[in-house]
Structures are given as structure tokens and as C-alpha cells.
Image: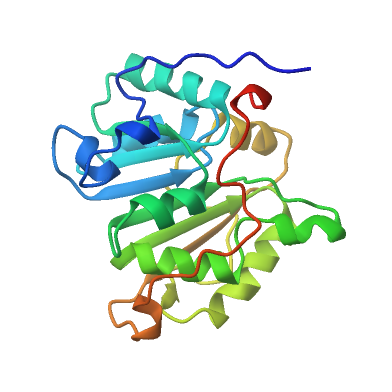
Length: 232
């Protein structure tokens, strides 16, 4: 059954066709370093993060219309002027609308783990994506990843050391505690059930090779556009 698409008229919502010439970072009233949350869900994480870091602007993206709508409502209710919300696919946003070294941080929380072995190639975070993210992170920029699925954490932790230009900020490949890190409603639900959240935190090194500063290839196979009538 086709889901009704909610028209989003919130002032914190940024349609792709309204991205300023200077990129999404230019859509904020005050110029600040820009952080990106990929997969904002219904906005629990981003409103906490933006309140914790008023010195940054925050771009929250998701491919689902309903989640973007709810996120906008929460941002408005919180009175935050340093958040903008977009309905857009992550790799499409990076390669079409962001400049090299334009991000202070990237956050990815509990993405779809695609647990079946035959589907794992669909996971967002892999070596190719980490190389892409490195290009858009500024020197010293942070990459945060969390998941409730232990095997996904092990997979990402195993890939990171092979990707040049990052340094682990934890004392282990991943951790089940990260003090001060906001917890979304989804995270809290799992924690209340006694299921841990696995955190990974890497930082882009200031010294980068020429290869790591080349524009990343746009690989086929990811959803850059979708039927607006077929996504809630």
C-alpha cells in the first residue's frame, strides 16, 4: 500500500532544490563548522547533539519522509537554530552537494544491519564509504558509528584499519560505553532490554596522502532517487 507523503513546510527543512550555491552549510543563519548525521530517524539524537554543541551547525538527513517531518517538529520545539533537515541519500549528498574537507564530524547511529549474509553488501558503512567520508571530513574531523548489532560493529572495526587516513580514538576496536554521547529513543530501548550498543570513534588524521584527497568515485548501486509516492 502506498504511503501518503507528508508535505514538510518547516523552516528547518532544506529541500534539495533550495540548497544555496555555497552548499548546505550556507543554509544556516550563522556560519559555524558543519556536522552531519546520516539517518536521523525521528530526531532524538540530533536535538541532543545540537544542544550539546551550539558551536556547530548540524545537518540531519534521512531518506524517509515521515522521519524528516518528525525531526523538523522536534527541532522547532527545542528552539534550535543550528539544525537543518534534508530528505536525501547520504552518498548522493556527499558527492553532489558537499566540498572536500567540509565536515567537522559524521555520525551514523544504528543503521540497518542487513543481518542476512546474502544482504551484507547493502550495508552503508564499508571500505568504499569510509574512503568517501575521509574525503569530506576536514583534518581532525570525527567519524562516529554505533550499532546494536555486534557483528556489524565487528565488521566495521575490522575494515577501518585498512583505510588510510584515520586514527582510532578508543582503546579498543569498539566500545559499549561512550560517555557524553547522546542516546536516541531506539538506543535506550535496547539498553533497557540489556542489549549493548557498540560504539566506534575514528578521527581523520591531518596528514593525508594525495590519493585520499582525490574525489571519491561515485559507485553504482546506491539509491540516489526514489519514487516519492512509494516512501513514507
